Image 1 (cartoon, rainbow, N blue to C red):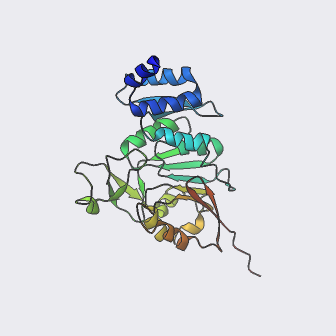
Image 2 (cartoon, rainbow, N blue to C red):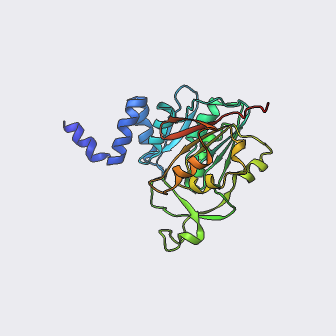
Image 3 (cartoon, one colour):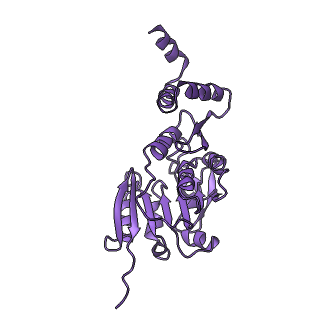
Length: 272
């Protein structure tokens, strides 16, 4: 009991949560070693092994990174029940720290994977985590429905809820002076940049921007074989409505995987 009291006094609340989780998943020695090593860093990075592989990834203790790690690698929320062209194009829009991108790179080693992440600290971690995978193309950009310059609207939020909006709308609406800004890229531009007519998989976790992106998807959505979207109607009303309008049930099969709505395009019937 006395030792437990000392432990609680020395370790902050969110660090205690991390250690309990890490001990359960990786054992006392690995969890303790990584935690102690991270105490001397300006950014509290810990290196964790990816289950079932020889790879490791960096996460920030005390942030939502470990929740994402749990969902991606242990609960396998991104193990979508779809047929995916092995050497096709995969776009990970809202790639965060690159954990979903690493999952896709291990699952589809012959695919070209474009990972979009607009927030600078997330993007640096994305680049570090995907560096061992030559098939991954990290882009510091935000997926949007039109060319624009976007600004970070909620810089005080946790790492997985950063939201980008057009710069003109952030002033006086929660945006802060000096907040990160980034160029947006459209799906038409992305497909043209990589010289392909089809996309094997598009995963979108873009904090409500899916409403605008899906509403303007008429020119490109028919070129996407599989789509996985995390909807954010609680944040931006109209996301589910935009998905329903863009992906009618007669053209798409639906399933669920974790927080994702997964859609597979039904092949067009040959004309008689």
